[in-house]
Length: 441
Ligand code: GAP
Image 1: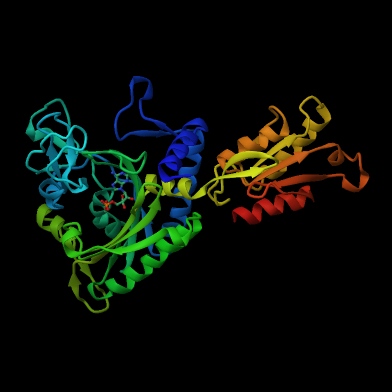
Image 2: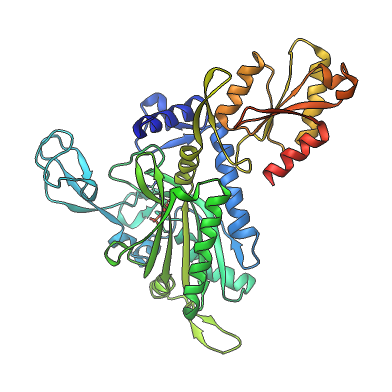
């Protein structure tokens, strides 16, 4: 399967099985927007939950916030986004299409019509709107381009409310908006995206240690969501390519079907943001070290992870096709921890009330292990397995006449089918429940 083909198959499966739909599709869509469907929401939430567990809740030095998308525009003036959050834009003089100059191989010729491209100019990527009834410049507000801004706005509030000692961090998951010149590659480059971000505040002398700690954490997270380590690469970003606020950045790149591209970023933002906001707002953002009586602005390490790019990496690395039982099948080899559905329970035959009753009872047992246990009694058992394979359900459990005691040795046992191999084993209900628990814990 070539890479273009693989991408088409992923997009098609995502739509067909209810993971990701084009935004406002019946009106022809809107470039750079996608909606998550039923299984997409479950997968996304599982990824976010795991991130929260590893980056926030599993640690004593982390706090959460949920800040607004609309903020005082001075936030983005102070942070440098109003003046500097831009990409180089070129326009074709013939067909008027616009491109990102740094994405073009030939900076002079239009890749669509061969026309002459104009001079590159900087295009600010922040979406502008107006707060209130006035639509003049004084009412301009921006949709936040990174969730980080809301974290910096709450640094002082968290300090005043909880008095944490350095080092500590604030984590947030939320939407960010970027008016990308050329949104593309499905959910890779979006205009409306979700980020999972941490701003970790440290003493200036301790930034390197914290940088290394979060670097390891990002690799652990990649492993936890099932990304093969050979597909995740670090790129030390050079001086001229780093964002204006960063003194060191490592991009975590992933081998997407369309090439090796940025998945996440880890940046050392120094005291750039807090100093800029102190200057911009006049509020003191100084930290007092109670032991040494030293006063300083904390420095910041920022692991920043895009949810959508993570989900795409998960889908791309999990997509499989193989031959099973003489048929070609498609399945997603998702890590059980993040799979939308953990197991499907099914009576062997739909028209045997005693099987259906028992299967419903068994499903309730498994639901105590995890709520995402599906029920399927539609079509033949092979079709049910294929449907679950395509959404990445790790286990299918079938209740048959032996479960009811037709063979007394097998009473209260079920067949447990493994997604990746299609192999089945006969287990007691309790052992099957334990298998599921082990796989997802
Ligand atoms: N707060 C730092 C920051 O926003 P960034 O490198 O611009 O840094 C961080 O973005 C992450 O957000 C990226 O590594 C990527 O995962 C995600 N991201 C950025 N732009 C995106 C876009 N247009 N569509 C989808 N995800 C995007």
